[in-house]
Every structure is written in structure tokens, then in C-alpha cells.
Amino acid sequence: ADLVARVSFLEDKVKHGTKAQRALLKTRDMLQVANQELAHSRSTNRKLQDANGQLTKQMGAARKEFKLIHHRYNAEMEAQRADFDERYTEKCQECDYLAARLRKAEDRWRRHVEERRWRHREEGGSTPAPAEPRRDEGE
Image (cartoon, rainbow, N blue to C red; front, side, top):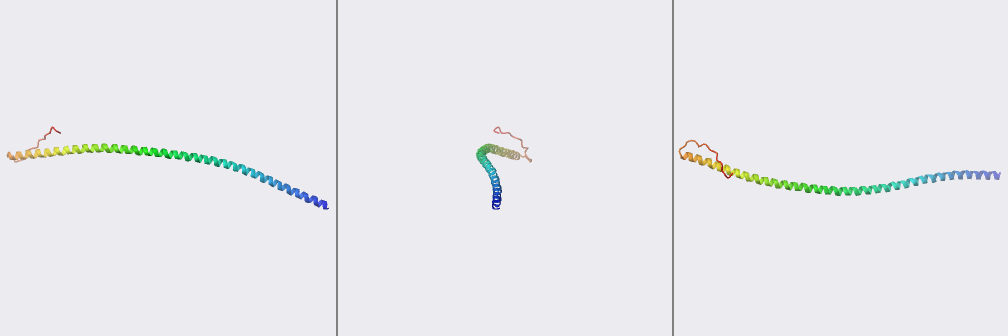
């Protein structure tokens, strides 16, 4: 009876050991899968970091290119503005010159008309003499 109990006890131990061994094997398999997933995650993480580095470099290059284009655009706009200002000033000077000539011509015309009226009055005319247009050769 003692031997039967001992055999039964050992069989229980073997069964329990087999269950424990199966659990350990299952745990080992799960750890191997987790390790593979971790390796894959690390690889993916490295790839993402490399891609991030590349994007950072590309963004820096794009930023430099944008600044260069922006600088060129500003310089071009400033040159066009200066050219326009120069031409506008030139036109304004020309307009001022023409306006001054026009004022002189109008003043001469008024004086001419006044002289004709006065001469007409001095000669005894009662109505003002009609103004005749006179063209100056200088204009």
C-alpha cells in the first residue's frame, strides 16, 4: 500500500511536471514571438527615425530654397518699384514742364487779349475787340 501511494504520488508529480513543462514551453514560445515583434518594432523604429531625418533635411533645404526665392522676389519687386518711381518721376517732371509752358502760354494769351482790348478802347471802340488766336513760334 505504501508503494502504491508512492507510485501514485510520483505519477501526480510527473503529471504536474508535464503541465508545468507545457506551460514553460508555451511561455517560451510566447516570449520568442514577443522578442520577434520587439525586433520588428526596433527595425520599424529605426526606419521611421531615418525617414524623419530625411524629412528634416528636405524641410531644411525647402526652407532655404523658399528664403532664396522670397529674397529674389523682394529684390525684383524693389527693382520694379524703383524703376516705376524713376519713370513716374520722369513723367511728373515732364508734366510739370508742360504745365508751366501751358501757364506761360495762357498768360501770354491773356496779355495779348488785354492789349487788344485796350488798343481798341484807345482807338475809340465801344465794344471789346474780338480776340484773335495767336501762335507763338516758341511753343
